[in-house]
Length: 601
Image (cartoon, helix red, strand yellow):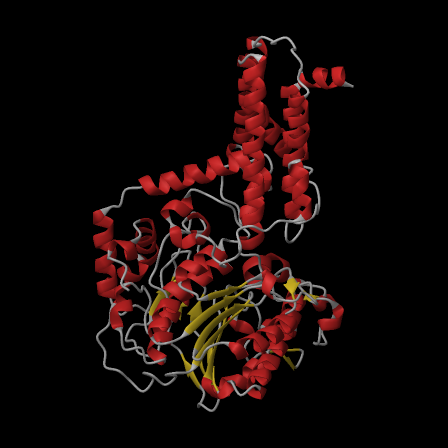
């Protein structure tokens, strides 16, 4: 038995390679489960597996330059460090759905966005240290064995093969895109865990460190900062206050961000049936803005989060909150907190998805209610049903300090609009019901029903009298993604045709007289408009906002991501000003304009 242990010791390097590979596969497999506490699946992308194995063999190859004693020590401590990285990443992920990184040294406000415990041990974690215990036993049974010399040829061969594999795979995946976007390595993906599952722990942290250092070394352009400052100065309007100033002063504010809701369904019927009967009824007590346009750029829903809370145009060549999540802004939560509000954001996604957990913390939300804060008892359409989500929200907000600002995003009406039969309440022709158009009508009709239920619950809880609901679409839906699937349909006079990029903005308050406001605007205007309506007296936020007060403006034009102007600029100067919006937004973000101006407190 003893001799067998000694023989195994002579294969210490190879045993370390095998054990670390197995642990890496198990490590990434945990992220298929919701809380990374059990093996939820296996990644069958062999190119990813080869990449991670190549990283490991590259690290182990160094030991072949050493004699046996030093090689044993090197491999042993490499294994311990590698294992420690995986365990710490797992523990942090279980609390925040992201991973450790050097960015937290320089961007401290991003750290631990949920205030979670940093030690989140699960029984399965033991599996990561079993091999280390075995290797200690092997080391202790060591008996005067010969000191095996270094094997430089093995080192050179393993080093070159590992490097060749790593470089080739990175080139094929990230440059040539042979997977058609299914796999990315050194490119930011929509979730931290997807990057980790593709790269493995070592390459992930190299990528994160490289990305952080690049941001730290990025030079600020004083000329561009001056251009942003001048644009914002030109954007301000000097107009007297009107009757809308402060009409919602002291009221709770709830943003309901409805997935994929376009404006064309409002006040419309499909086969004689109202698509959004509850919203239509609410218009009698709402400010309804019917010329609001989607302005999301590189992202979709997550861009909307940023636009409505910061009044800053997002980037087009990347997703701002993913790739530039460290940038600070003067935001609606910060503004409302100055007015005594308690602020909460709620999504049924994991906090690492689209990096919303960290970025919403940076926006200033006091609490973030993510996937873990809701009971997952019913799924309709894309995700957790709007019924259970809004029901649980109505229960949770009762305990919030008043006044509060809640931003909540629904999911049931997310594409491809394949809502199940039990939740299709409209009677539509079979060919329409099976088409994306019918699915879209059914999805919005379902969401509308749940909005009505939510309003009733607020009424029953005594909250509705002192609450203003801001209901809007995060981006367009059926026309944006499936226009080619519906354009040849012939249904109900084809009133639904045409992609105009409009989303509804409905600001509802019980008892108020309804009014339609035709001002042209977009998501970038939400923050200044709401600030005006609640009676905010501190105008300093307008030194950072790129939007306008839609209830008190002389201007009537805006822009969408294609560069197309909507509305009518009053003169050439205004036209040029609006056309520059996205380019100014880019300079604003990449130069961290808010920080450059001293970050008003």
